[in-house]
Length: 127
Image (cartoon, rainbow, N blue to C red; front, side):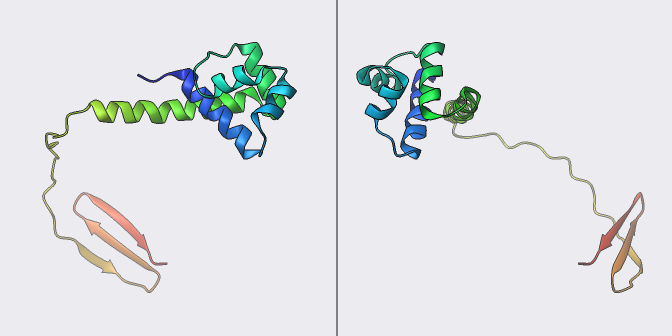
């Protein structure tokens, strides 16, 4: 099960560590107890929107940026979770195969080749 509070805590911790700041510095700036901030970062406590706003202000990070990063993490976690739930052996997917047709090259200048097939024409431009 994916817990949003854990993903949020991980992102907050990374933001703080990117800035080279300590829990003490951020908790003081956000006016949040060091222990509580630590529990939020470890995903043990749910942070209110007011608390998140104070932490974002202390980190000088927009809440929308924080939430976007959390959303990205959540998407990856959901993909990993669904991949783990799928059966290990997959059935082959049938693919429609068109029969090959012969083609003729009608003109070959050095910079352009035109290939004409019975139902379509493809231009190939040399680099």
